[in-house]
Length: 113
Image 1 (cartoon, rainbow, N blue to C red):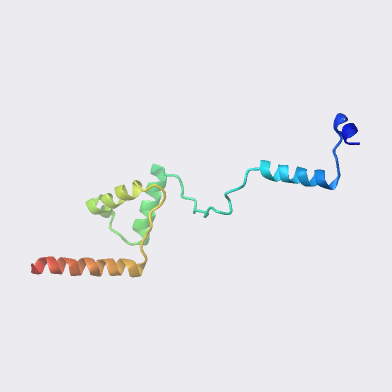
Image 2 (image 1 turned 45 degrees about the horizontal axis):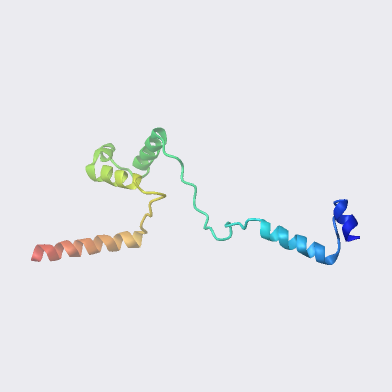
């Protein structure tokens, strides 16, 4: 039976053969990394038009004066953020508040010296 089945390219359905085919199929398939990867938010691609729209929207929503876009500190922040590989982590309100307090205390200590 085995000689005939192999000569006729017959698919053997004996339990040992089906198990062997299952093992071969499992070992020949590449495992997926999907379960191990953390999904990231999609960041829109940069364009001059999109940046202008977002900066104008930011000016309006935060009631900033128009000349703030020419401020060197603001421009430095944008340049620094543009060099980030993936995205920029924005501090929470509590973290920002604590950083400002720490900076203030540090400056006071420097002044007292």
